Length: 170
Image (cartoon, rainbow, N blue to C red; front, side, top):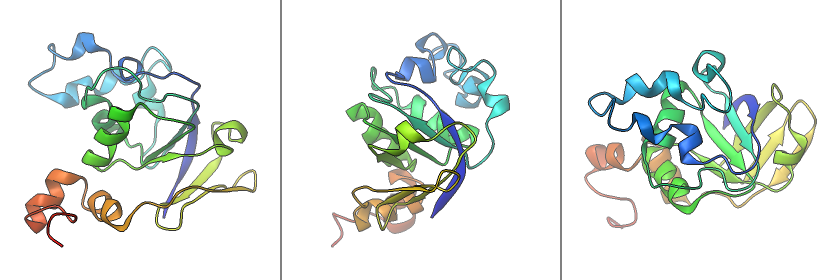
């Protein structure tokens, strides 16, 4: 179960909004140096306003654009525990699962939630709740293999600990 404070964003938040490509080579030696620039063009000084466990709630096409893995990795590094959105850029979605950042497609919660609402995400049962508003939405549950990868912190950490992927060792 994931529980956190909502940070509401709109539609079409691209990977370039999450972290501008202009920092890609400037801080190539240390990704943590990019943290002050996460979502800076959407919410100035976002990294100072986010708290560990916060959940981004967004509209359509969250993470559209480039295949830059830095985007979901930096969201996780600043403390985001999950992203709930109406839809995702495919590569962002895949990269998020790969690095252990839960992403959930929802239809209702992105319209009803506001920044500051308390959101719960139950990946195994496929339920997203806005505790503040009393709204609950059923979403497709994560397959058990995805839950295992997420719980280990992503594919690399999973392989380091278990020697292979859950779907290749069974």
